[in-house]
View 1: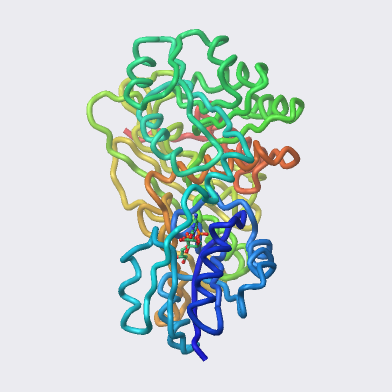
View 2 (view 1 turned 30 degrees about the vertical axis):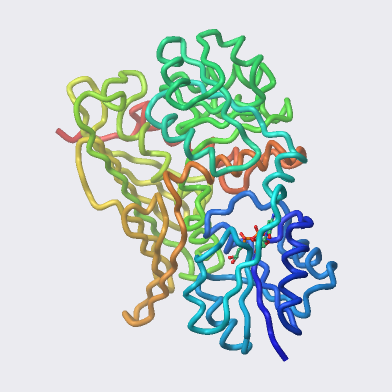
Amino acid sequence: MKKVITYGTFDLLHHGHVSLLRRARALGDYLIVGVTSENFDKERGKLNVRRSLPERVADVLATGLADEIIVEEYEGQKIDDIQRRGVDIFAIGSDWADKFNYLREYCRVVYLERTKDISSTMIRDATRRAISLGIIGNGRVADRFVPESKYVSGVDVTGVYNPREESARSFRDRHELRFATGDLDHFFSLVEAVYIASPHHTHASYTRAALLAGKHVLCEKPLVLTAAEAVELHDLAAARRLVLLEALKSAYCPGFKRLVNLVKSGAIGQVKDISASFTKLVEGRPRELTDRQAGGSITELGSYVFLPAIKLLGVEHGRVTFHSWRDGEGVDLFTRGLVEYPSATASFKVGLGVKTEGNLVISGTKGYAYVPAPWWKTEFFELRRENPGDVKKYFYKFDGDGLRYELDEFVRLVNDGERRHSYMFSPAESIATARLIESFREGKNTTQIH
Ligand code: C2G
């Protein structure tokens, strides 16, 4: 019996897929189809898959062409499958020409002509109009956001607003957007959703204006600088059935999410302490240092270091204390602090004028999680125990600048209609973050370092 194997996502199954399966089946007597798992697709950068794994398996089964279906879960699995199952032929579409020649060591490799003029992407685009998204403020992060958006399906960055219209125009030209404007009402009339990447102290007013104009909002962190504003804006979004998501990239990236789930499942016992650092030495006089209203280490980096504590220990906490070193004008160049919980503590360090190791350590009663720098772009972590040999290592993908993950979640929420809140970073978590930033800015429980 001649065994053939092929692999694919088979999202929104179409006649191109069916034709490939038919020709693959005809190469032998028995066809095994490997359908990619959701995780594997995310790991290889395919973020736009519409149908779930069980649905895609059912679609392939319904063609009647597969004798056996398996799930493809990891890179390198093809070699295992071919050897373990005694496969004679590996078949795949010609869009992969030469990419799988390394499998020739194990079986025959056949590239079958891909069916032209049809693809899952075309169907995705045709069945769901892309959300038109405009950017407010075109600083450094906005420059990174536009290229990242190309990896997320169902969204089209169409234009940009900046009160300084010349700046918006040059951003539009640089990124080949459709429009640039200095008129906010006009801007709102052209988009369905906005990404706010303006200076921190302007986030609240732009978010409010966008929500009142009926637009979904993805706002850079920190969403706002006070808890009251965070409550007001999340309430406003809820009342209007709009999505308001805070763009704190670590919260949405695959590695950090897994870390939280593992620790929550008891992998290191009860969490008793968290220690997180993030420092970024900045040169010259960038916004982080010159913005008298909202510059400094805590407003810039605090949202990141508060995140593990908020995710793992909750949004309710006790006393918060800070030790802070400020420049002559009061901007904090380094702050360390402690958030007290009834049964645990969380300490953190942030700095724009001091450099330290940027790692994350979560200490539990059975072991600890160690995430090396840069932990906020979680690609790798270890779970360690008393016995130094008892270490589990975890690897994840963190593609590009990582902004694609927050945008992907935003697009899902906008399209969902029902679910308006993300479990990855909920309104309550966003409000708790704002409360911590506010308590620092109020100067309560702060010791100055000179
Ligand atoms: N295909 C085709 N014609 C099309 C579209 C797709 O022949 N118009 C083929 C692809 O070449 C592939 C199969 O259908 O052989 C599945 O395609 P996808 O669902 O896009 O999956 P893909 O990302 O190609 O998965 O391990 C995963 C595989 O390496 C490839």
